[in-house]
Structure formats: C-alpha cells, structure tokens
Image 1 (tube, one colour):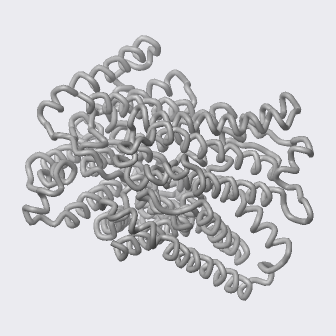
Image 2 (image 1 turned 180 degrees about the vertical axis):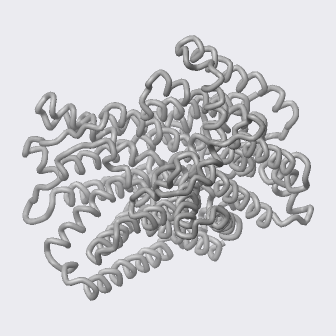
Image 3 (image 1 turned 90 degrees about the vertical axis):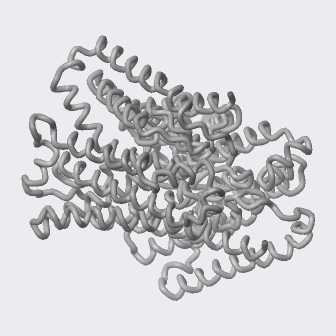
Length: 316
Length: 324
C-alpha cells in the first residue's frame, strides 16, 4: 500500500471534532424527531445494545491498524454463539458453554492469522473464505433452526446489572480498558502501530512480524467469542443468521471513528464514539420505524462518506 | 506485495507456463467428472450435463467481468447484491411494460450503473476496492429488501424466458451467451490496447501511469463492465427461475470469486485470463452440482466454497514464489 507519513498525535487531535460532531448531530436530530429518544430507559438501551458491537470493533480497530481486515467476525460470532448455546443446552453448564464460544473464536482467529501471516494470503480474501466456512458450520450445526431452551443464568448476563449499571456495559467497559492498556501501554501495542505504519522497522528490530499478526487476529477471535456470550444472552437463544453482517457495523463504527484504512493509523477512543454513533443511528431509526433494510443502506453510505473524508485528509 | 521482476523476460516464458497451468486445471476438471460419474448414476446423463453447462454459463458471465477487476488487482464483492437489485428492477419493468427488451435494458443498465459507482468510489474517492464494494454490497442489499418489502414478482412473457430456459439445437440458450462473451472477453483482453492496459495496471500501476495509460478511466471501465455482466447474469437467472425475490443471487458472490481464482487469475493483478475463468466456473459448478447429486446438504456449500478460495490463493502464492 501507499507509504504515508505516520503522525499519531496530531492526527488523533485533528479527528476529535469529526466523530463527536457526527454523534452530536445524530443525537440532536433524533432528540427532536422522536420523543422517546432522550429517556433514561432508551439511553441505557442504546448503551447495552452497543456493547456487542464494541466487543467486535475494539479488536477490529487493531486489525485495521495492521492494514488488515476481518470480514469473518460476524460469522464467527454467530458460530461461537451456536457453540455456546448447544453446549449449555447439552451440559447445563454456563462455564463450559462460555469456554466453547471462546474456543471457536480462538480457532478461527488462529486460522485467520496463520493463513494471513504464514501463507501470505491477503486478509480480505482469507476472512472472506473463513466467513464462508463459519457460516457453513453454523448452518450445519443447527440445520437452519434456532437453538432454544437456555437456562435463566445465561439471560441474566445481558439483563442483569451491577450497582445500577447494566452488566453488558460493565463487560464492555472492562474490554475497552483491556484493549486500551494492550494498545497504548504494552510492547504488543507498539508493535501493532508499527505493523501498519512501519513493518520494515519491526523486521529490522528482530520482531517476528508473523507472530504479532497472528496474535492480533487471535485477539479478534477471542473477543468475538466474548461477544457471543452477550449476544446469546440478549436473544436468549442462538440463531444461524443472528450475527451476520455485524462486522460491517463494526467497520462503519471504526471508519466514522477516524481510524485510517490505508495508513495504519488507529484511534481507540474514536472507535468507542463511532460504536455509540452507530448504536444511536440504529436506535433512532428504529424509533422512527425505519425498516432494517433502509438502516443497512444508511450505514453503507456512512462508511463510504467516512472513507471519502479519510481519503481527503490523506491528501493534505 | 513483491515487486514485478522483469516483465519482458516474464512474458516471453509466460505462454508455456500458462498453458501448463491451464492443462493442470483441465485435468482437475476431468478427474472431477470421472469421480462424479463413478459416484453418481445421474451425473453422466444428457439432462444433467446440460444443467451443468447452463449453471456454468451463469457463473461464467458473473465471473468474467470480475476477472477484469481482479486483473487490475482489485475486487468486486458487490456482484451478488448487484444481481439482486438488477433482477428485481428488471422484473418490475417487465411486469409494468410487458416489454422484455426494456427489461433487459434495465437489468444491464442497472448493473452497469452500480459498477460505474464502484469505479468512482475506487478511483475518484480512492477507497480500497474491497472495502468500497463491500459497502456497496450492503447498501444494495438494503435497497433491494426495502424496494421488494418481502414481495415476489413472478410470471414473465415466454419470449423473455427463452433467455434462461430456452434451447437452440438442443443446447441451452445461456451456453450461447457464454460462448459469445468468452470470445468478446478473450478478444478484448488479449487483442485490444485497452485490454493490455488493464493487464499493465494490474502488473504495475505506477509504470502503467508513467507510460501514459489513463489508469482511472480504465479502472472505471473495468468496474462498470463487471457490474454490467452481473446485470446480464441477473436476467438469465430471472428468465430461468421465472421469479424475483430480494435474496436472489445473494449466495453467488463467493462462487464467482472462487471461479476467477481457481481459473488462475492472481489476486495481486496482472496475470490470468477470461478463458481460465471459464475452467474455474466449470470446476465450481461441477463441485456444487456433484454435492447436489450426492445429496450433500446445501449448508456445506459456503464452507466448501470458502475452502476452495483459500486453497486457490495459496496455490497461486506458491507458484508465484517458485517463479521468482
């Protein structure tokens, strides 16, 4: 890809207004147009609904920073959710179910990472292939039907709350803190920045580029496993099409949040705001009774506009 | 990825190597045919062979336009969603006007317009092709579902249905369309300056630009052609199954990409051919047809297609590395 200059700090600051303005405009618009929007119940609802997306968008930000992409995330999320539900129904143990979801995520993350890093297959085509594999496995495991009959202990993970804060929000906050620490306060995080901006330097410093790339994708798979726990709890069931296309919402959130798709320049807080913006958009359109098909079109348009603006910034 | 070595030296040796590669692929197709004949009584019957040819034609039409895109080191993930919208619009127009010709013009026009939009996103807005066409895919899916609102449009005039289910001299009509576009595609890619410029863009965009190739205009053309071919394919599906729904063609994107890659066109651009894609389309159709005949559940199809894509790219990577 093109070798632009890496200017992390100045870029991040220049982006603060962008996504914040988008978010403010969305909130103002929906606040005026629909009376149910600015209520404590709805705001708590938006936050809870955004948590699953955040769990996908956090690792996806790191992946995109390495000039990669993971199109399989929605399908892996779905398969992990099915593995979780089937295990819980069979054994009655939520812990085993959670482990099953994490295992599915780990295996797909590792598979993606090895194909991309060791076999040099471009990320978008690798994850398109594994998307097909995960989708096929989901259909095979369920025969196209929902997996139902989960115990209440699962549902509580989404509907419960700790100290008045919804449990999913607590989980998402922990995930954000973890990713933040990983990206900005560990050597691994520094390598992630270098993987996108300056891979040669990493090689010259004797770091295994392949190993680092594999770790980034494994992180993505594991987070998809975590997200599966929240999604299964929210739906109180698993369905073979439940998470299809979620990776696109995540990509939209990241694009709006100002992470660059070409220069390995990422901004985690922007992703957080982007996720909330996508959540607000979906919620607001739902309140206005806009069909979900039209919502997808809106989000597609937003991705393209955000990338266009990103391209303009790159020109300067 | 790696820089192109010596283009002159490479093209001097290219024909023999490409011929060998094509031979291997034909061998794989032949082996698949033998295996299927042994495994299934139904495979080697006139009806099934004609069916395979008809499906190959459909997949080839989609994949031939996509081949040009991949030759420029780009990707078009929106072909399946393009088929859905083009088919639904064409179906509405045929229903409203009763004119198959207007319907055909709508299908191809809609497909080309979507492709043109992709081209603009990739060139003027400089969005990487896989992400631009991925965004386009979701936008189109949304528009189609919104437009159809769960409805089905069915029942088209017999003269339109000829395009998909008719026969001429015992051979299905789509096969003639396929042969026609194979010849056009071969001539365009190998024997015209524009075609050669497309190879040049894929092999080395900077060198192509420096030697005066209008890179942006050729790229827009390539995406528009890919879209138009998807529009054409949508008409053939429409004429064959005689109804249009919002999810029509959705599952065809992966097989079309797989057909191009199995056909030997490299994801990194600059090498491959439309004729190779025909072999790839035949291979994919045989695999999917064989799975049907052996009564393997259709849920296996995305899985198998995904594995084929990964294997094809991996093999391509290995042969490129051994060349270097």
